[in-house]
Image 1 (cartoon, rainbow over the protein chains, first blue to last red):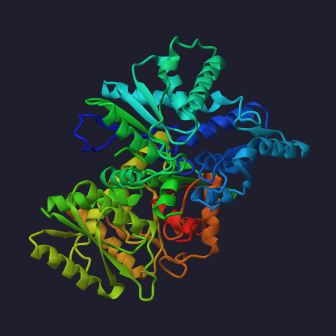
Image 2 (cartoon, rainbow over the protein chains, first blue to last red):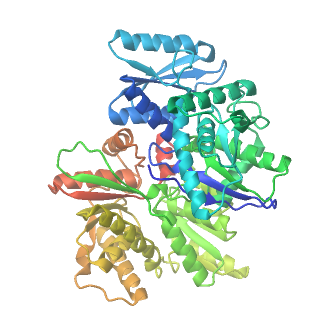
Image 3 (tube, chains in turn yellow, orange):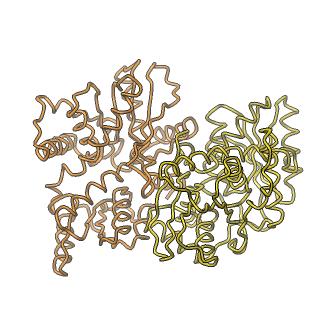
Length: 317
Length: 317
């Protein structure tokens, strides 16, 4: 996979920070995004485990489900999506669900409180028909496969290092949206492996409890290092930096401050951001930089994609 | 500008052709597309001519207007869009018009039959206020600036040559959508300058008369060579290949054959195509390859972008 471009952004903050963005939204598969790297990791893991049917999970906004359904369809692999809904949440289609539909992937809807039994039922159905199901998150409780997705961004970290080597300097800090935590986990693993000085921040975009989010990332880091047979550096837990003050009312919720950032970044830097993941995290980053009084630093934001959500927002889906 | 990636596509035609696609839809500005290169060429030409206000022209589907409005906004340059409508055509917003709106670009609507006087009036207004207007297509009749846009793809042709040099072979043929003809003109100029053997085909997507389309491309080639002070190779006109059998009912019109190709390419190769430009041209290319009995060849399709139109289609805007 060719390295994605890193671009300098125009800023007007006057804080002396240099802002850069890594354009993983331009990865050349399924309309891009961090889930392209992560889906390849899941697919390879499924193959390594001798399974033949992919079970994916997400909300109707899920970029991961879009990419995985596309990857499976393009390779002729069966795929079932479990799509969870908050109580009272509308069930309307989004660009991602339209695209998942195009691939012929079967979508099984369930409530947020019924995920485990739905996973179990779908896996049972596949097994009963002689298939070998692979659930991306491990067992029915979503446990046991933490390190797989993380590996994708531990690998991608090398692209950032290569850019820094070209420039002759290192970024002081890096920010990414933090939802499942897989991308942030991978970046932290990449950072720990080389031992550079960069500080990595995950901007939380959902209402997952911060303590729980930290545990998930911690588990992912440990899983990743265990699989490599590598020793975890002492004090690695200090590298898990979660910003939980910018999630607003929770997953998918946003106000006019995020909307303003989205328009500003489109107009000024021609970058499409969506209100659920990248726009919220970008806004959170700028708020944090100001509140923490960070100045004169080189900052990298990871654009994790979600172009379909940008268009959902544009057309008020 | 970094070279865009060229990818091999999976095919099921069984004709022994190898199909490749150049992903100019992933150019990292304003959601990509060929118009990114072309807009940069227009902007540089405007600056060279000492003008300060850009006048752009297109339909509500215009990718060029999206990119130029974004480029002007990001650089603080004034911009006015003249948006023409066919008689009886609906005036509904599209993703591109939403995005143009975000940049604060003023949109002046007019009928297809009133373009010249509208251009004249807008230019007059700007001049009266002390500005120096630049109309991208030259004078009010859209004449006089044919070579500017072409230069962008004459330059981009070097990227294709570099890819071929890496592979150790040359493409036998190349296809692109042909609307204004600028992209095709540029590719032909690039081809003529190096004198390689590749055949370049423009798949017509509008109902522009074929004879007229040929004249426009011819004029563009002559303009480009004249500006460079280079001699035009004898017989250059034979290099203007226009396929006019695949435009269906005209600009913006398409049937289920094009829709099938769009879904197939998304599912099989994860490529987003839209029904107005790239999907129609891609379908036209596959039809032509079959009808002309072309086999065992290496074929390159230029993905000219239009991701906003892909999402228009997906959500039935």
